[in-house]
Length: 152
Image 1 (cartoon, one colour):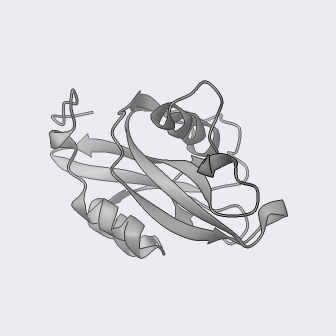
Image 2: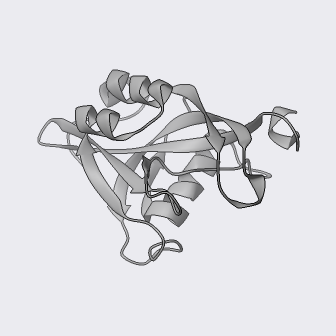
């Protein structure tokens, strides 16, 4: 299983946290803990949780965002993890949408990260990974199954 390989490529699950305000889709980005780059919440696979559920858990821990996870992978992107014990580790991130219904003031990593809402275009400019930029640029919540993009 790719997600369990300790030496090679590792799989992570990321949350594209979004809301629709007055017809405009906005994306919640957070800063990375060490380099302070704009990223999406992401983390390792979790036993007993689907990719969408694991991504939703990371959105809560890293951004204080809760809502409705959508079990549809929007795409994947890769990056090299450059901090912590897994330094230099190649990672492949599967991105799942999270329709944010609440943003909490108190959450586990609130003192370690900043969070901010951006338009899709601005969010795509802020992230470093070209594949993530493409996922953001192509994102249209109105085409997700069972999701209403009318207003959050």
